[in-house]
Image (cartoon, rainbow, N blue to C red; front, side, top):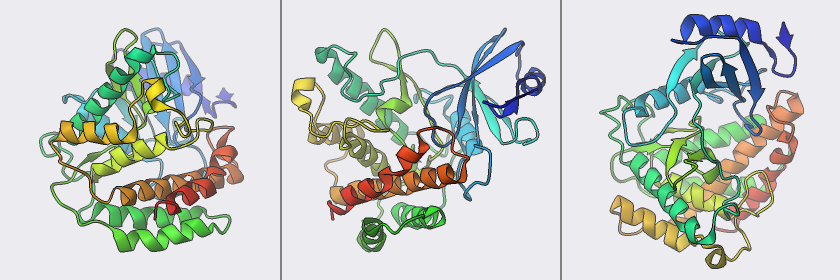
Length: 339
């Protein structure tokens, strides 16, 4: 029977997983995780244990968006590296099972910090959380993409030029209103792309604190989540995006630290975060920092606009989608403030 809240049949899913996931045994219960604006995510509780299912949302999708098959590929490739990820169990490309592509991975028990101020952590322990986070980011950017079979995971050429073109097209496809700050960024960013140097690295694309699972008993990361936006490119995009998220207001879909006293919180300031990342990577400094931040605001604004479009179309994955969509204008304005 179709579960209207989940939009798929649990019995059909149980039969499929029994046949395709080694050791899987029903009966099965399914709970939707909160959040997940892009790819709806579910906790599966079965007799054989807990699993996590990530699917494309139902309905008409923008081209190249919601690429759960790419998520599955990168998780599979990283399983043998020092980057902590969930174990990738199975990718289902048969849309007839639950109505869209999906994959199943291991359930990693641990802590997710939704607030980067870390109110649930003692002040003196907060710095170690950030240090673990930056260590994991640096390890990701040092992954040998040839050795793990990801040398063709992204297209060649200037990463930022490609990304600006991609997200401009995605924004245009989802545009509902005229946002002058977005027009300013669309004009400014292509003309100010720094020259690319060095070999492409694996870029996560959405590296923020609430996309990490930490151990309950130590400042160590069990798994990096949400690889939908991952590709090959310039790793500075990840550190700039992380710092950009921390510039956001404390209230909102993505909580930031704007207006808060980071020293009093025991949380490193932006300069210290960048310095630590550079030390871990053996980089002397990051030039054109405002470009990377402005690009990050632009891209997140384009993503928010896509969420708004899906909400208006009635196929967004979260009831707060309209609220998220309204972030687009404010994010674009924060980006133009940097140029």
